[in-house]
Amino acid sequence: MIAMKTTDVIIFCGQSNMQGQTEALSENERVTDAFEYKYLTDSLVELKNPVGENIRYDGGEGIVFDSIDLLPQWHVDHAFGSSSYSHTNLVPEFCRAYIEQTHSSVVAVHAAKGSTDIACWLPPSREHRMLIDKSASAIKRAKEEFAVRHVYFVWLQGESDAISSRSKAYYKDKLRELAAILQKELGVERFGIIRVGRFTCDARDDEIISAQDEICAEEPFFLMLTDVATQLNEQPEMMNPYALGHYSAKGLETLGRLSGETLGKNI
Image (cartoon, rainbow, N blue to C red; front, side, top):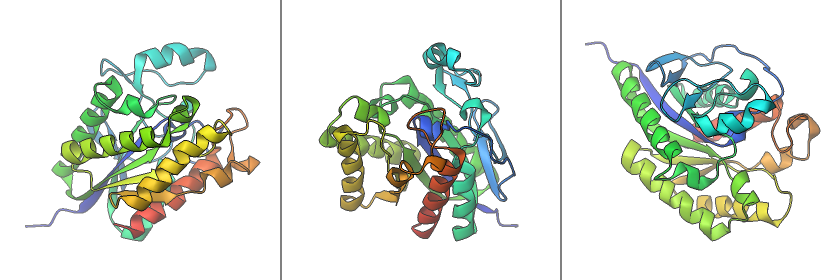
């Protein structure tokens, strides 16, 4: 009997910077030994930019967010979004770095939507139901073609909670709640956090940043993947000049590369 090739499933979740809201499509070369799970076709395709799917709340195919005029109605209709304007996302660069460290193949699952607070990813929300459904379907599909070794979750979110003045205690409690569900429902083994950058640029950001720092220091299930987002905020070339508080293609690629290296070194 020929042994099945191994793979690791990595779920990428969060709001607009995880969805991808960059200014350009920097590259769209295939990531060797990496695949993206597509829920709408229940298939594994080669991983490359742009990443993600536009999935409506009814489970059908939505539209690409490619005009600011579409934003209000797009949010009403969609549970998930692909990279805005079909531009660069952090997932390909993350997976390149992870594969370089681990020599494993990867099945990437993109499940993100801009302007979502952490409660949007918890039950009984429709985003939560779609997160579990898409991720479970991806794991099932991966197991049909590979020997799945690990299931990981990568989180880039928190700007909306800062805007809403959520406290550190509130945000940590919600992270724990989400983590417990992911462990139970999907068998997630590690919850990796890309520490959020500054969006409100006042003390509200500090509550979310501190929550993420503390939970990673206190609880082994959580892993701080990188804390450089706040440094990138101070570098104009790392920020999208057309969307305040969002990273450029270079910025997201930097976050992806550093985060993928960290996860790969800590499996």
